[in-house]
Length: 500
Picture 1 (cartoon, rainbow, N blue to C red):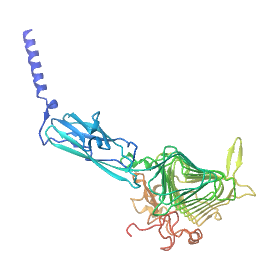
Picture 2 (picture 1 turned 30 degrees about the horizontal axis):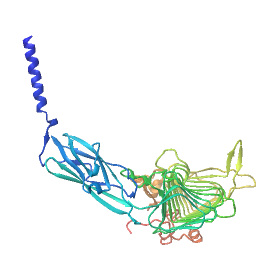
Picture 3 (picture 1 turned 180 degrees about the vertical axis):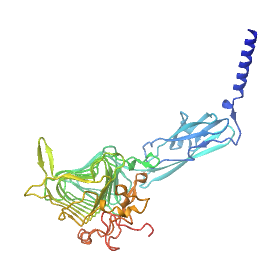
Picture 4 (picture 1 turned 90 degrees about the vertical axis):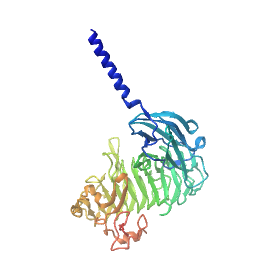
């Protein structure tokens, strides 16, 4: 019995000695024992003034063999700083907190936000501060804090009942939708930026005149200025706001050099109440990256020139009856957020109403010098009913199409089919041409797209020069001269060497 007790006593004594020698709870004051930060600079994206930013997270690591105590963590600007921090669960009241510990091979979280004051300035103003970590050794380590503050003009439940002009300058932040009344014209000057809150739309019952320039486009976007991931701004995702809707009584609307992106839908035209009027002229615009249809029209009339309409969960262009002309447009369906998405182009002259088909006749559907592409093998679909006394008046002339080859030479004139042009992609293993994407300069890297034709693409030099002269689009959407080489390219963009 005594031997067993003596053995147990020796074992416990040894265990205590082993624990006592473990350095897990030992701490160092060596000036060489430094902390490591997940980033030496915490940079916020542009922040709307008077509104709290999203939260940024930073990790503080202790890679040393012993623990490190932090005597004080402070924001250099103190209580006057616009940056706010929470360190290891403790909010730094007045910008200062004391007595933090990080055991060896361990870490703590730092949560940061910024709230910037209004500055009465149209352009963003840069703010900088520092976060200081005073170690028990007396060493001070620092992390830079940066943010840009943007003033905005807030519109809430705005209804324009008389002619109104919005000037450029600081962006307009729109809550509760924006309505243009029947008797009013809303004029947007070049450089205007409208940022819409969640699900908020522009409703046009009167008239919209939005004529931007190449140097000062008019932008319609959501109000999230931060990032979902490091390489993905919220502005590059869908469903950030509503869209632009033109009601049946709205006619003679003009949009030039407008960028409409990341909404629930792009542009929607209701059935015209004045059938012979033109609802919308869309020139040199972008409708991109939306959750519904990019361009949707029913029994309306529109002219779309030099415009990119791309990447939609619904149909990229959806037309139901009416009169439409598309000239030098790029219609591209490469929606990245779902494997189930609509067609690049959907045409229909009927709808189901109960057990019967309701007729929505087309007076004209012309696609001239256009590019219509997408991932599917056939991206042009629809439901067209034709009768002995009615032939649907659609025409594809000098277009580059990803669809089934048609024998109808009267309605498909000098068309080039993507399925017939695969040879230009076979010799280069870097550009195998899957889904026709090798036709374009940039396809989806970090969710960015550039639908400028690739140097080898058959899209080049296939357009009919007479068409662009007739519609006044001798330059492409970004101002490149279409007549500078042997022949113009189809689509919204003219090829130009990146090395010029």
